[in-house]
Image (cartoon, rainbow, N blue to C red):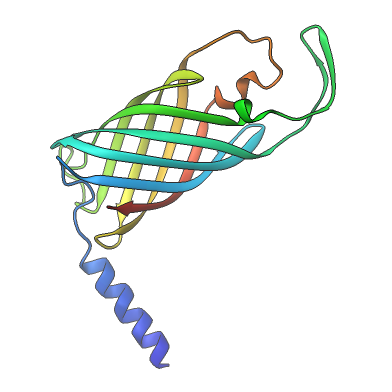
Length: 174
């Protein structure tokens, strides 16, 4: 019973003592979570650094762990049990965010951020949100989408990092 009461107290204290999700210039956030998309799933890690009251820049990287094998015809080639190489599974991007929590006057624990990204595979956009339970810990979710894809479409795994993605996981203040 003591453990339940202690846990309830800590949870209530953490929820009532939560700090502002995005503080502006100098604020640094790290997101680590799952990346879910058609044809595979993996991990995503991102780092965002505040440059102004409502503006941040950052880096995001994805690596697909569970990728479906491909068997069949693609272009002029036949594949049987083909698996993607590292370069097909990995993507890295530089990004900019507009942190809108204070602009649209939502809860200070919530950071909503649309943005643009420039990566190894495409130029794209994203819309995300972070909610902080305490000063240092929260959760995030993000939707990503390509706007302009690079290269040609002649590789069987070309679309692995050129499609709509859904990510969710933990967010940390540094």
